[in-house]
Image (cartoon, rainbow, N blue to C red):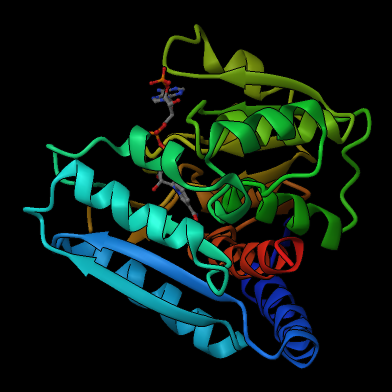
Length: 283
Ligand code: NDP
């Protein structure tokens, strides 16, 4: 048996098309486009690529965007002032601070300084709290993108046993919360979990967000499980890969996300979705 390959690129393209259409009606309704500010501090190479990709994604869907590229000598106080400038400007619908920040800056303080209504990354504790409480909020893009993928492929979450490997603030924990909201029975594993396979083998839906190339082999997976690979790693040849040993696991899974082309494209698409949602809610 070979599992269905979950096509994140195709679903992300659909999300972008929806956002694009809604951006046009937003513009007609209010006379201006939603606007995203991406704050980048310093010149960390990967950040420059991510920030550029976000700007390009905005252009494609009709969201206005600006990159505020600040020197790595900026003080915490000045950076917080920049965030406040975004918070108080009515024409700005979303703001995010690209991580990592240089060591002398406090990323948590920056995250908490963003107006929760403009927190398009969905990392602010108010949005986290609302998500846990099942209230309307801006959801973290990667877990929200995974929920969309599951929905697009009609994968039942109700009553399913979902095992999430990883408990970070940006992926693992919110993923677990969203699956709970979808009536899954959720197990969360992490680096202190003893005998990981004992848990992963019970999963109807296995979501891995660790960051260790090919660590989840077929022995960790129940035949017929849905397998979602969040990770973006490099193997020994320098090739992009996930946590899941794809060649093996795709033979026994009922559905699986590839890396690249699975979860990755969804993250930026959901960021666009959040920008538009924030713009609409802020009107
Ligand atoms: P973190 O490093 O913040 O978290 C990794 C998690 O994995 C931690 O909770 C850690 O446990 C757990 N872990 C580490 N080793 C093991 C192990 N041997 N067994 C079980 N659990 C383990 O990473 P992120 O959550 O930020 O990202 C995870 C991966 O997803 C990375 O590859 C990242 O690049 C990718 N990613 C991809 C995105 C996308 O758009 N596709 C978006 C965001 C991330 P503990 O808490 O105990 O340390």
